[in-house]
Length: 195
Image (cartoon, rainbow, N blue to C red; front, side, top):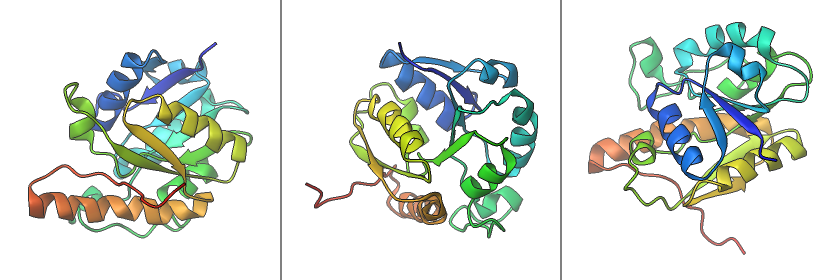
């Protein structure tokens, strides 16, 4: 039986796109409130960095050991009226590591989906063809997140190492925002040379 997925922030661009694509793939996904997250096997956090701490504080009482939390947060300077092409320093090292400190014990945190274009994802006519870098310290949690991401047609999930590597994948989003602005495009990432 498929796992149930709750997307916190499904009203936002990335969350709405994920909901659309997972529903199309037959995944039991809902855009939910915090109470619905309690019923889910996987919770995907799709909120801006300025809202991450508050969202996790509200989500914490609804999370339980064994759940998987996929954190998509990027600490863009735009969260504090800065440029979208810059990232903020996070004391823990990355937004995902901050999330890992805030969730209850036993909740497994994986970082992913930072380089995905929400514009392309939300467009049902857009054919996707990109890699999704996934970071995490729990091998089984990372494998589960990758399997879920692979359900989206055109996505290939790649193991990008431990959770501490999320600081790099989060920063890639700022780079892509700059590239997108310069080329008037919506870009993603493709890793070449893999077997």
